[in-house]
Length: 190
Image (tube, rainbow, N blue to C red):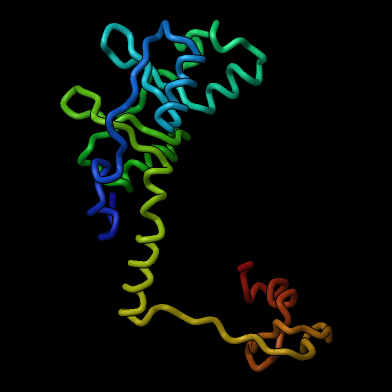
């Protein structure tokens, strides 16, 4: 697995949320919703005999309780939890965590260290770093001279369709409107 220099330095432990709120399999959907609201979180870990056995998210509450018009105080977490939990090690890169999330179609992973729960990492945790990562990549590309600035727009008649446009660009000594550039495959949607 090839790692980029940017993501190989950002580890799961750097972005994970800790500690995790734990509830019992016998607690209810109402208990989970109250804890999520109290701590402003989007998931709780479900435990059985001090061992993690599942996770309940806000989405689980909406899809498995509210959408089915069930009474949250009567629905046990064991009935709506996602199980088994999917774990990641704190020393893994966020790139590895993202690959796991994408492969398994989940938006959060439980972080386990030496057999114990250390935290949770969600897509939201990783996305907090995205603007910084994009800026670093942009700067590296500028240094390498790779960043291309788009041609400026011009006003006038398109040489292809003859329509007036204030978004003409010069392509191979022809002025083309946005629509004609898209039709010819000379430009992608911005």
